[in-house]
Length: 451
Ligand code: FA5
Ligand code: MG
Image 1 (cartoon, protein in one colour):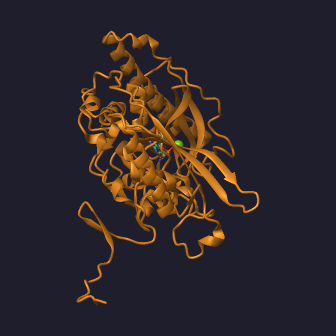
Image 2 (spheres, rainbow, N blue to C red; image 1 turned 90 degrees about the vertical axis):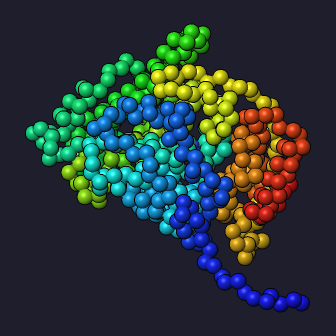
């Protein structure tokens, strides 16, 4: 047999992104298809709906009270994304099934909150917004995409600087300056609940927390009212018959939990027959200010999904459309002033296909490396394989059946994949080929047994 004539030097494996090298290790799970999204920066593209939505929301948080950060790089440390925010070590958000790791210390940020601590430390202004692309391994459907855009916002008050040291009074005074609205927002729960939504009693009085929560809610409700009145006025001004047909706006506050706020909430808007979550928020945990060297501050923070808002605002039916380069999509958005209802250029036929498989039983997985057995199977791995093969030709993926064999204990799953292009009709051959590739890839990458 022919022996190699020379050995090529063994290069330490590394990923190069934006001219920087990241060493690769057991944690690395970010595929090239995801890295290819980094240059898009939809939040900065003139006349892109994500960018217009960003600007409309920013206008509710004017400078100099708020500084706007829009150019922070998406690759951050695990310390920034999780540790600085008090995520416990076993928080599911840290797992490789939820987050894209470049290596064990470095991730694609999963939220704009990754920058909270550094901006608190910078201590430039009383408030800020950060708009940016964020990355998550997640489900595939019309309102979820592995890359999306968030806007983080925060406002704080300095105990040493408010008149008479009475923070609550100062916050209520600032609240009076916020634009008035007459939207009735459902908000059934008390601000502070001893277990579910506790007061940070070592740091805040009840009055302070109540005042900050009220300022937070009023600020965000103001954003929602602003956004939707623009949409309606535009529709009405354009003589759009739909202006009256638009359902009355329904908005509600729901209790939530985040490791870096307490109390915490999510804001939901009624959309296409269901409640859609558009943001998370809360009273910032004092630990963050203390660790950032500004222990005398107190205040609130929120994180809003820009695509979710843009979908509501323009009636965009599918989150994949934001990534389209089709001029029939892009040409519909031009100015900040005129927000009009999106006109779908066509709805092409959908094609459902099912795939069923058995997970490998744990006994057969010995030495199986990273392949899936019942213990480490995660649905997001299926999602990513489908996404990798089908890209934006996949509209959604749903678990339709789950079964455990009574005798062997083996588990079986059936997923239904909906193939549909936003831009053309897919041929039968094409969908069959895609589905075949998905099936092969599931076997190769997850080691499942097809049924
Ligand atoms: C967060 O990311 C928190 N950082 C928000 C926050 C900031 C809370 C500051 C408190 C203080 P959450 O995971 O719920 O929270 O995401 C926030 C918003 O991002 C959601 O409400 C939703 O609008 C949007 N979002 C989440 N996942 C996706 C996705 N896969 N595709 C599109 N939008 C998404
Ligand atoms: Mg949430």
